[in-house]
Length: 252
Image (cartoon, rainbow, N blue to C red):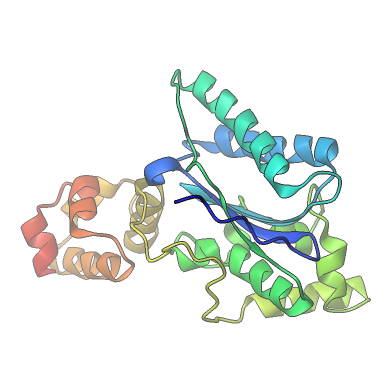
């Protein structure tokens, strides 16, 4: 069946999710994340779009942007093609990196704009990677609370208050609110990728390496394993990363 056309935003603002093909990791290290942000900046200047928010996760990206000089489809092709070309060169690979079609939804009123803004910035918190939103270095949250580099923060902050200082305080308070926002939630009850799972294990178990969980006292180890399962890590994934047998993990 032919694909349905994308809904056009009357405001020009979209929430976009760009995901790795078959959920593969698209940021292997910090250099990759930096390169993607540089790509966003480069095409922001060339294509004339505004960026209101971003969050780079292990195998997907969230963007909140406004098309101006070029339409969204052209913008996303430029960004995707440029990053994939560099990524394939770096890792000596060929072929697709992203799913063939990005996901998008229109954002046409101020209330939903703020909902999406918060949802994007809370992604690492939801995934259990950090305990505080401001700790995550690969989102635009800190550009709203500190020095602006690439993000067009004025529009979002003015929705809170005309006074910038008061607006930032309200912005931070708003982001602490736990909500059931889904916002183009592409099966985010998903399998947690290994890069994120490793961070979750290290944080919850206070270990330098995942395999250090093996040397814990039995009671402490089992408590940690239970917490990790509650965080959404699968038995198979825990066994692979920690070296602990699946039988022990299942019993914990």
